[in-house]
Length: 350
Image (cartoon, rainbow, N blue to C red):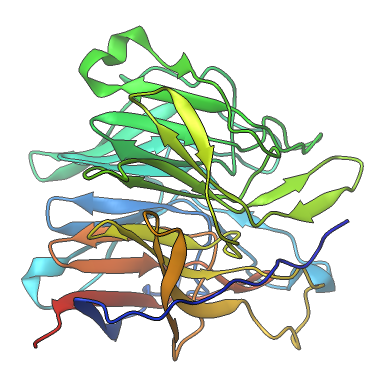
């Protein structure tokens, strides 16, 4: 049973861009109580409005104290371009409490795929958008072939790829599912594709690179787990080439389970992750707060930086213009953060 992720080599390089970080106004109070944040949310942009919907937290006690996980229906929204950063809330926006799904940013809003509550996983797919000044939900989307939570996914050439996850909450087994939905032919539904040559996994990191010789869907890390109690942190990486309809295993070791990532000028930028599974407690050291940059062509990490704040896991990156936002998340087992961190990508002046 491998509970600790491996190491990796850094081939340092001067990047043509840099990130300027800011901590923005935290999520607002709920029912006049301090907002403890949410993990495993749906998030993204509807126009210039950042939205965060659903998710889980522990309201009264931590899990090691016997606390019960709380599942949310709330939608938070804030207009990034207004300059005021004033949160608004719709308390019962989602039809049911849901978390641990996949968020895909589309032109008009956020597509929310799968997820679960305390009892079951969902195959539903719904779209959050705005019409006549009001946020709305559309269910006019094909369901997944199976219920799926803790999967990962990305949008590549107008096709949505979904990988891994689990089908049940009682018998929690990681899978090697790999599905695609062609947005140009969405009425045909999801297509089952060949899986990568590697372990089943949930809590993996998925990234799409849309241009260049390294274009494809990338799958990193995650963990393999079984209802028997078996669990292994995975550190492998794989790339799916949609032209060849085949996978290639990547060079390198990727200790990024549960973290987030995005593509930047052909490279992959990783934020945080879990390198070791430790029991939850107030003395837990927290998760990885390292930013790493991986060059898929060279097959090496080319940059590493320790960030000054606790980088959440089980959350998303929402991108707007040259900014990206880490949308709440989990900073220790059971402990969420209400903080929203913005990274602004700026060119390096020569």
